[in-house]
Amino acid sequence: MRATISILTAAITLVAAGPAAAQAPPPDAPPAEPAPPEPTPVEPAPIEATPTAAVSAEPPPVEPPLPAAEVEAKPSRPWTDRLTLGAGLILWYYQPLDTGGDSDFSLFWANLVVDGKFGKFGVHVDSRFRPTKLRPFFDGPTWVEEAYAHVGAGPLTVKVGKLYSRLGLFWDGSFYGNVQVYDGLKLAPDFGVSVEGVAGAERPQGVRYWGQYFVVDGATNVSLPGRDTISIAGARRRNEVVARVEPFTRLGGGGGELKLGVSGQFLQADLPAGVEPVYRAAVDASVTRGGFSAWAEVLRQWGKHVDAFPVAATPATDTMPAVPGRASELNDYLLVGGQYQLGKLVGRYNVSYGGYRDESVREWLHVPAIGYAASDNLSVLSELVVWTRNAAGTSSTFDRSLNVTVNGHF
Image 1 (cartoon, rainbow, N blue to C red):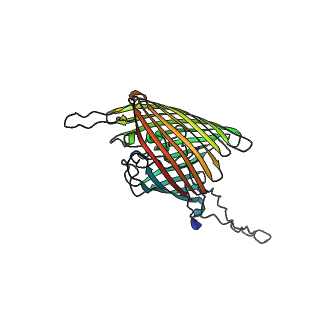
Image 2 (cartoon, one colour):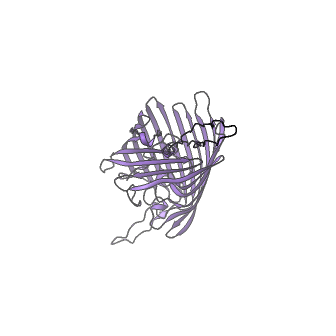
Image 3 (tube, one colour):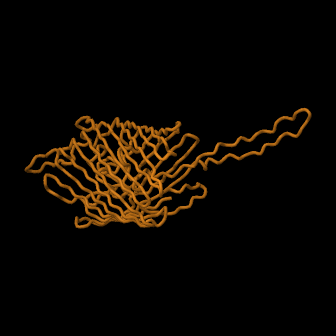
């Protein structure tokens, strides 16, 4: 949705729109990555560089003397034509409902996206900033979401740097997000290399694929404190391997696409108490047809990637000793949603589930929403959030709130 612009004639048009993160008693902030139902990272399309035309020199005279042939010079394109800029912001209004706490209105984040293309080579940088830290474990209020170099190698694209991992569905199109993103399973950029491509890009059927290896985590995502490895002091995710295959078929008569995805992940959670091997597997499907979209994902995790969730540690008191937290080694996740767009209006419903089986804890997160697209670059999304938790037979509300976002970008 980012319109490519020339650096010399940039026109700024605001927009509006939807993963990730608000938290309980007002979540510090939901994941910010509003996107279409079958989200894929939104990046301004790079401008292809045209090879510089050579200016031929005038040849020496020949015998018999003839006028030297003049070849019209073709000026080379300036370097600015190989660079594109994008920018955007998300304004977020948070109103708790029946859970206490104060309402808030803030800049969730603003960002600047730079894409450069030089023949087969290119770079992509997405820098983000806000008045305060997005999460307590961030180094500061500014951070680099993604930054990588890429090169085309036949049907493949190789990316090296900080980039998103591709386990399961990329995103669900919401602003507030899902249980998975708050546990660090989505919108999680890490440092490593990705080899990806598509077979049958121009045919009715084809397959997209990713193979990724990450040396270490990227230290930034929208997970809540304690729910992912990166928020634990001294802990890191290391040696992460991700593989994904996504067959697709295009639907005739009005367009659309049906996609199926199978993906797996292995990583080492380097926790203070030791290194834990973690395995994850996911199966997902999504379909778009006209104004209708739907998606679903089932994901399972084996192994502990944290040390005190879903049961938090209890500090010592004058009468009771401290009780260490407990982590679940077998977790199930579910994500289901759909939306229908009619003109500029869109109605959507998204529900996610996290089941931490070792500790008998379950969480459900419902996010019905209505959106309005004022233009391709400006949209408004209103989401009702109902996030409940059941632990040992006792139910509680983690967050119930109204979240309104204005998403603008160019």
